[in-house]
Amino acid sequence: MSGIDECLLEAMRLPGARGAALVEWVSGLALGVVGEAPGGDHEAMAAEAAEFARSAAELPVFGAPQEPAGTRTGTPDDSGAPVEDVIVLGRGGYHLLRFLEAPYEGGVFLHLWLDRDQANLALSLMRMRDLSERLVLD
Amino acid sequence: MLVRLAERRATGALLRDTGVLYLADGVVVHAESPAAPGIDVLLTADGRLPQEQWREAMDAAGPGCRIAGYLVDHGRLSGGELEIRHLSALYDAAYFVLAPDGGPSRFRHGAVHWFGRVRPVGVADVERETRRRRRYLAGLWPHAHLDSAPPVRRRGARLPPVTRRQRDVLDLADGRHTPARIATLLGRPAFHTLVDIRRLAAAGHLETGVPASGRIPAAAGAPANGTAAGTATPGTTDPLTPDRTPFTVLDIADGRDVAVLRRLRDALEEHL
Image (tube, rainbow over the protein chains, first blue to last red):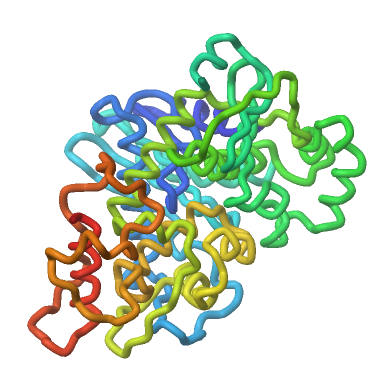
C-alpha cells in the first residue's frame, strides 16, 4: 500500500461503505477523505469524530491514565492509545474508528461510515485493523 | 495573493514574518515556521527515525531536494506514515504562516524546498483548515495571547487531573519556555501544544494573563487593562471569538475558590 488515498479507497471496497477518512484527533485535521460524509461535510465529520476519538483515548473510564498534576506515575512507554477501536451503532449507519498503532504524538485514526443494511460489522472491523497496520508498516 | 498564485499554478516560496509556504504548480507542498517544529524534529524526536538515518538521508538526498523519496525508497518509513507525518507538519506550520498578523507577503518564484514532494494540498484546503484551527482554539479558551506567551503554571490542590499529554506540557510551563519551544522539546506539532495549553488554561492549570495585583477589576475599568488583550489587535472585533465562553467547571458555591473567580474574570475581560 503506498499511501493514505489507497488505504481509504480500499476501505471503501467493504460492503456498505459510504465514506472513509483518516483523521488526526488532537487537531481534528482530516488527512484524507473519500466518499460521502453525513450532511455532506467532510470537515465537520472529521472534527466531530476527532472530538469523540479524543474522549475515548483520554478519558480514564476507557483506560487512559489520568494523573493529578505534578505527579509522574505513568510509565515512560504509555504513549500507545489505550483504545483500539470505537464502534458507534447509529440509526443513520455504523461508524468504525480504528486508532493507528504507531505512537504518533498527534494520534491518528481511520474512520469508516457504513450503511446499516449492507454492512458486515465483523468483516469491517477486521479489514480496518489490517488496513491501519499496513498503512504505517508497509 | 495565495489564491492568485494558485490560479497561475505558481512554483516558489511565499515569505511572511511568520514563516514560509512552498508552492509547486499552484499547490502547497511544504510549510515552515519559526513557531512550529520542523519536519526533521517531528520525524526524529520520538525515535521513529534515528538521527543517523535522518542525517544519512540529508547527505544523500538533500542536495537533490528529494529526502522524502529517499526515506521511502530506503524503507525508513512507509509511504503512508510519511504522508501522515508530513501533512501534520505542513498544516501545523501553515497555521502560523497564514496568521492574520503575519505581516506582508512576498513571493520568491522558483524556490523549492529540500524535503521534496509528498502529498500536496490545495491552497483552499490549507486556508480553510487554518481558519478552522483558529475557531477551534478560540472555542477552547478565548485567550489568543496564550499562543505565544510562555505559559505559567498555577498551583492548587483543587485542580482537576490532567492527561499524559497535558502533564508533559505542564511540566515545561515555567514562565520561560514559549509554546513553540515546548512543542520542539516534546517533538510535537506546535498546534497540538496550543490545544493543550488552552485546555490547561481553561481547567485552571495555567495563568491566563491576570494583572500582577491579582485584584478583580470593576467592569468599567477593564479597557485600561491590557494584559488580557495580549497580541489581539486593539480596536477590532475578532469574528472568531465565540459568543459564549466555555466553562468546564463552575463551582462558585465555594467562595474560597479564587481560581474559579480568576478564570471567570479572565473570560469576562476577554469579551469586553
